[in-house]
Length: 234
Image 1 (cartoon, one colour):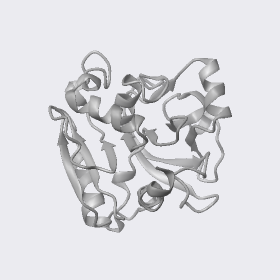
Image 2 (cartoon, rainbow, N blue to C red; image 1 turned 90 degrees about the vertical axis):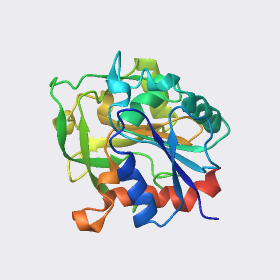
Image 3 (tube, rainbow, N blue to C red; image 1 turned 120 degrees about the vertical axis):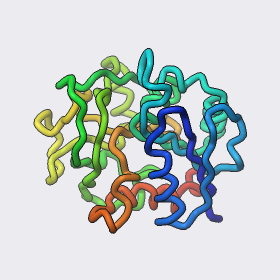
Image 4 (cartoon, helix red, strand yellow; image 1 turned 60 degrees about the vertical axis):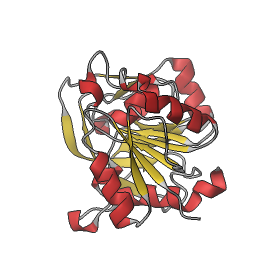
């Protein structure tokens, strides 16, 4: 069974077409844009909340988008076990919606960061990472001003115990230390999932490194893993 994808479009989304292009042109799957004012998920099997600046990032990143009509449908979809991927602003929206724990703060440098970073896969037994070669360090771009993941100590312990930390900022050799943390995130966290394992939030942009014409394709490994394993997990 081939999955159908849905890409949510908010006012201020700017990576929606990037996500659409990767799914449609690189992988060849059906994908629909889902307008923020609608509630119909159009029979999507996998939902992507793209990067950008939803509603201008007023109040807090993702805080207004969380209340858009489409998000109630996304929340119910996730609660039924549907696969949801939030990228950058999409991750921020998932936090605001309560589908993932924690919050995003301003980058430690207080500057917008736009560059390639290296990611270590902290849990290779998820729908999002099963098909990534063991020990593979991913090179994926980031572009954010509010990517400093923060939560309380008890929640951090739960994330570790439940193996909910999926990606961590690292060196190209997989060294996870503060030296390679671009934004100050707790435990170098670049991506986490919920306890049930069907909702992923990540700050780096895999849709920006999934086409060989760009000279980098590590992001495609994440999408490929989801495509190959979503039926097994759900």
